[in-house]
Image (cartoon, rainbow, N blue to C red; front, side, top):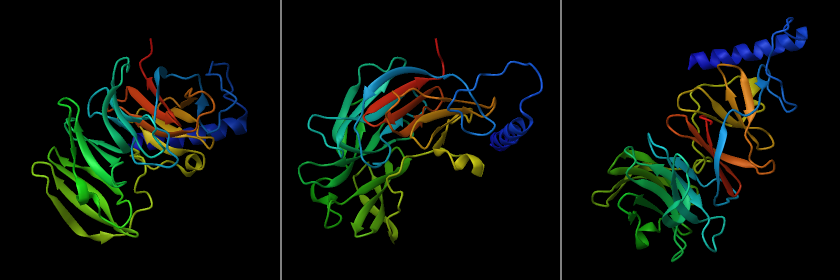
Length: 302
């Protein structure tokens, strides 16, 4: 990871030198910068990722946790799509698989977000908002068997005097899920769920709710230079560290290749504000949400 940071710092210094000196001083061909090039030390080139498909997603007005989740080690993507009569709060849990990502499969409804696969990719936990009582709950669906479980059935879901908001923290193993539940105004309680017997065990004392409780998951193994952070938002590295995707101030998505000093924009229609991005484990695929649209790109182009 120090290699990535050193590359980025070197690129900034090189970019500043080029500006000061007026060029390289030779006639070697370089990639043609596009008018929207912004970051120092990076050359803007034509996009190197290919768009595979565009699908419909649930549009949200604020983060609801991860609405995109690649199955561990695979090329299947879970996402939240709209449902008939859906609001900006709930939709339908969908699953698509490579290489073409066509024919989405419905997994569950009344889904609000916060998707999290179990370590082996057998179960998928998610935040739900039940129509029957307007309470938040957490459920797990097993796509291969078509089994769905509400982990807070009936009145168990009522953990405060309001909508009883909850969040998925993560899987400890295939049978244990850690979550947080609202326990009052600005109060949350960490809870371990045993999927084998359905038991709920409180962990530690209550805490104040974090301001980023439902934020998207981002992989940021290194701290980027301040010159970049002034312009970049929602930086998300691919698991192999070869690329990163970020959002500019206009909420357009850009991909950076630190090793060769290039960046390029991703085509999402030119007017959609991008919010969440998610790389597959092998770094081959990149999924991103632009308002009510889902775009899947591949690093391997025909």
